[in-house]
Length: 263
Ligand code: BMP
Image (cartoon, rainbow, N blue to C red; front, top):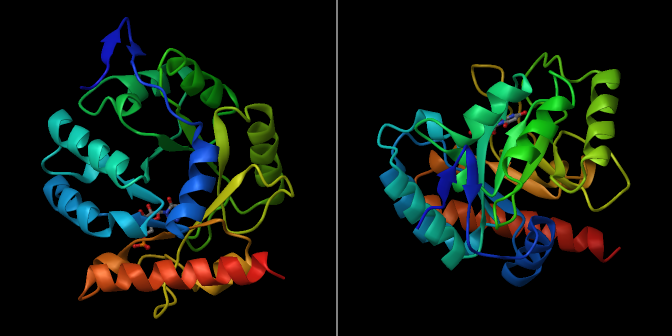
């Protein structure tokens, strides 16, 4: 059952482990640092795929606003699958507005994101009030919620890749370290290992797409750029055998992580 919304605040009756801790446990138990980014337009298809690759991933990232068949029933199904296979559910919403608006976007509308997404992504462009507002709107949820701040983007010419901007994001992360569990980044931003660095723009065979995306390999991302989690989309979803390819990225990512850990 999804939690009921009361005066815009969500009431939920279930408790679980904090998200950071959950990620560490999942990585060790399932031997995976792979986040599958399922940029598919059918939630039915994502549900089927998540059942197949559930054992191989630590996180599933979706964009709910590209789905043709979104419903609260289906998203609840996906959430149940994420609990069964023990992976985190990330809605890549990239919130970027004033506090009042993001609270509404987080808790209301068709998607009611706060009721099902363990994690969301957030731009700090509007200032730290955005994080405060998001955190406030999930205060009464009886289940851990967190966010990842977008510090650096993988796309060509990204305006985020500016030293002062990144410094501001790091400051915000440290200030709201209960709710902010880490970054979407292209490099290691802090020596504090409690912050999880998630890196998109990963491909073993391509260096980019036609629309400015830039790729590095899993090894480059983990070894060179200090990624904790690899966010992999079309390298898997466009492959002929998604399950096999998912296993390959899982193995490659975890092997590099283990090699580095044992140095
Ligand atoms: P792909 O691996 O198919 O290129 O997809 C990358 C995914 O990561 C997309 O869903 C995109 O929205 C997201 N992403 C990204 O590519 N670069 C960033 O800097 C931040 C992202 O969230």
